[in-house]
Length: 397
Length: 108
Image (cartoon, rainbow over all chains, first blue to last red; front, side, top):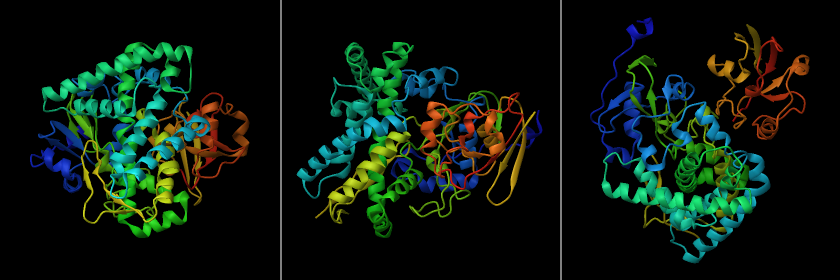
């Protein structure tokens, strides 16, 4: 037995944590957990929840001890075995199949013009819906969905299909209650996505473009991996830019002094974006599995332990961030963990930054004069594994 | 062993002895060197392991690849046309037994 192991503490149990409480507002729960121990066994979640910045950071950098290839993964059932649940070297093969499609050069030369056209279109629809419309459902969601549809190359689907596929398969991934109705919807989307891929690949072979699926046609990658990775990307590339857009606009509208700063200097939208994903990480928790008995930040963990890496909590760790519960674009710059880290660092990070912070937000505040929340119809923020605005009526003019 | 020196703007220097084959980014992240983040784990995807290589070591370096070139346009600190590199793309070993770099004030 190593010295570290003899000195390690057993994991405390947090039997007071409930999923409905987490869904409503996880942050007071994370504060309490983090203050007590970097890791807890949480019976309601059936996982060890890792809530300190340092512990989450250590895990992200160490796939030798902490595997992404989780046993009995719900995500594998809902979406197939994608790169998100693989370790290197298998993960690396899949990751390379994405080529340069999501990288800054392709965004600058190709995608930004498409994001702009989509923002024009859906902002016009929001305006047509009139003051009082819902910012998330009338603008952010269709905008994010249409961007993703074109990036992926689903020319045989609609943005509404993308939204339905994304939500139902995400619900499957989170179906801890094993609800058969949730599985039925998730499986229907699974099959629809497979059919859409089968249909579009021959078309893209003849009519290549800049999309992910088009790139796949010339990559040495099995169809099974393409299918799983496309489903993961539908789940991971739509709700997240939608939610960061909603949350950031909400946070700026609730902090008029910071909004005034951003309006005076559009370069600050990038700061607002990074602070927003720190403050409310759109993906708040993701899984890892302990390969063999180990000690993490002084806490003993057994082989096979299923971990929840709670980056939503790590990003508010007072050991790293001063006054962490506040949204503050002027805070000292520190790296947050919202995009994950190490080999699973979010492949869509640059797409999100460009589409949300460079294009959508500046245009929204430029064109919707006196944009404000509706004092008689309050917005709602909710979720913990995924968190964002579920309702956000806005007024302008 | 190979030697890497990270010079900080406040005058402090982190000197690391590392195994051959180790990248500057991995060495810095493993040893907790301030100012090197290495978010993406070495995929030339994030530009948070930006360093300024001291001129006397520039000749021993591999050429800047396409992905690295792209990310060097995305660094938080200003790019130096000759000295800026990504730490994840430089590996010490037989061809480079020693290197000294300056750490930018900003990585994010």
